Image (cartoon, rainbow, N blue to C red; front, side):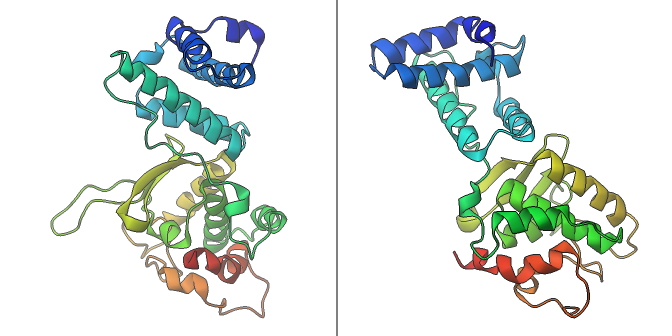
Length: 264
């Protein structure tokens, strides 16, 4: 972030920085960190006033920062600064709701399944596939799993888009939105969250969706389907691959090493 950009902070952001420096008496280093995070927000917002930004805008900003390579820890800190800023704006009566509430950064690499090292994950994601539909599916699963920090059960519950309720069939509870670069999942305890999808994961997902569209018996909703076309049940990812003796696509190695994720 350039010095010129930081110097051109919107009045609300400048007033907030003055507040945390003089009233809350935060350290100069902490105030500088908040200044950089708010400068990012202002730059991403462009001509839109910060007071008019909505949750969807902030999710898009997070996805853009994540796609540009900003790490999980930095994203979490940035989101924390944005939440604090909007909480203060709410106290001033400037905004009715905090748009940053409920937005989470991708999970840190240290919280990924312990049985699969980060360098192994990179090797799996970069593995050259044979171009088959299932190979493209496996790569997309690996990329999404590590881009968005999903649990295995969450991964296979995702629909390829949001489906409204139809008859006795309920609306989607987990779905991908590549236009917004995010995946919405309903996890443990029925809690729903939206997390960013990185650029590499989005590219792999688009390749898989194109291949998925050619499958004759694919489940109407499921993002990831088996060779028979049905949604993949989570327990199948905890079993050895039936073709272990043969060369395997990246997703085959994903199954057993990633299983501890379900037991956390």
